[in-house]
Amino acid sequence: MRDRDLPVAGPPEPLPGTPDAGTAGAPAVGEAVWARVTGLIERAEEVALACHVTPDGDALGSMLAVGAVLHGLGKRVAASFGDRIFAVPRLLRYLPHQDLLVPPGDFPEAPELLITFDSSTLERLGLLAANAERAREVVVVDHHPSNTGFGTVSLIDPGVAATAMLAEDLIYRLGGTLDRDIATCLYTGLVTDTGSFRHASTSPAAHLMAARLVATGLRTDEIARELWDRSPFGYLKVLAAALDRATLEDDLVWTFVSQVDRAAYGLPYDEVEGIIDVVRRTDEAEVAVILKEDDQGVWQVSTRSKGAVDVGAVCTALGGGGHHNAAGYTSPHGVEQTMADFRALLPRKA
Ligand code: AMP
Ligand code: MN
Ligand code: MN
Image (cartoon, rainbow, N blue to C red):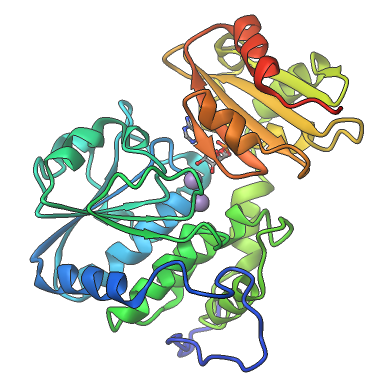
């Protein structure tokens, strides 16, 4: 890339007559809450940041973007996620600012100020849930309607497409600006949670944010390739096995990927995340489900709806959470029992 001065992005000017689907009407986060959050951050010398386990682009991207800005403001920053095996998913290794990450064991035990990203429950913080319980203040930055409000301050807006949208706002309110690296982190959150601006959550505000981010000179083509257009060869084989055993039951399509499937090709767990996007194409199905056995032998369930069914409600009832059209949970059972429990809660057409 040419060596040139790249612009930095600052807070947006309000655009007259531009409806913001995310925050139409009264803003979900009031000014008093914003003032409380910026006040807590300004007074803190050290800020601990945590996102949900097995982080996705929105969780990790939002956390690293805010972390980089806080670091630039002279704060001590420790960022982490509470997985037992602490590793950034291969797909997200291109993200800048990973030097801010520390393993959960090195995370402040009782932080003065903890900020969480994209985590709808305390449990989704995994090993770091204990640190959150000991923290003096916990600011929860999130957009899940199922958020339990587990912090001392809720910076939660279920109307925005990604936690990254709240992270951007927070950065401006702290007096920060976006350079290309910070914008790459935020863009990763925005583009993954909107399904490349295809999902219903993609508001005018999401597109306007993308314009600000892209203007910093980030490489949308390189980000897209990292996220969606590369896999180890074994992925093809595991995908083939998962599709081969896909089952269509009325308006439900489902399949599974076991540890044994992945082991045959040495395929890490995080590589199978995208399979749901193939399964959910099924025209005949309203709801798509994939069961993925993780490295601990526990089944992680991913669900998608086309709109008629609130899979977020179903997954919340099963101990997980998520959004109306994309949700998940962890099942303590095997494949058959997991599917029986899911079917039992699935609203059926009259
Ligand atoms: P995924 O299927 O992993 O892409 O997740 C889709 C949505 O469901 C995301 O918004 C997640 O935050 C949420 N989700 C997935 N797994 C869980 C879980 N075990 N507990 C709570 N929410 C979850
Ligand atoms: Mn997430
Ligand atoms: Mn998110």
